Image 1 (cartoon, one colour):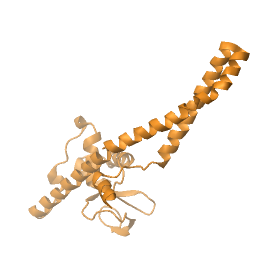
Image 2: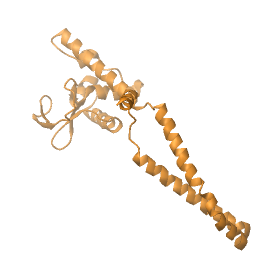
Image 3: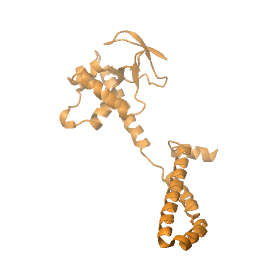
Image 4: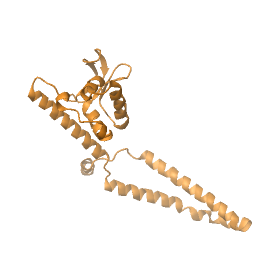
Amino acid sequence: MVRIVYGLVPVQAVAMSDDTPDNLFMWSAEQIAARDSVTKQAVSKTIQAVLAVMKGVPVDRDGRGRVLRISLAHYDHHRERFMNPAKMAAPPAEKTFQSDSFEEAKRQAEWMRVSRDKIRLDEEVSSLVRQDKLNEAVRSVEHEISLIVDRLPNRADELASIVAKEGVHGVRVALRKIAHDLCNDIADRMEAMASQAPEHDPLIDQATKEILQ
């Protein structure tokens, strides 16, 4: 989808994500700088930090991939969460939402609050760990490690031969090598399991639907 951007930047075609909500407030660095009484360079630096820390931040870009506008809700959320509160003040509501209509300004402020609440909820949900999935993963890891460690008796004949030929020192060296081999085997198996695991667990309601189907 292509969106034409007007305002503080030249009119041009800007690539947009198809899932970008229409009710987001997309602001340029110049607009944010004017609101917060800081330099455009400071805002641009913060925008880069937002994009580095947060995933899926809605932005408008020009044909060269440069950020023209960013979701104001995401910007302010990052600003509140990560920046030193002693060095910043909350952006005045009257400078954020200016409108000829009081009701329109109130509506915009409410949309902004809803957007930021959704961002917080998404972050909280993404940080949750399902206990049932965690227990299942622990059991799987324990099982795979035990299978590898249980192979140790297979090296008994090798160790007996080393004892006869090289004595205690030879066994010590052999055991060190066996331990190293076991650790490598365990690491390889854990890496393989991790590569096959989904990035995110399904939510409880989704899992319930799968069981019922």
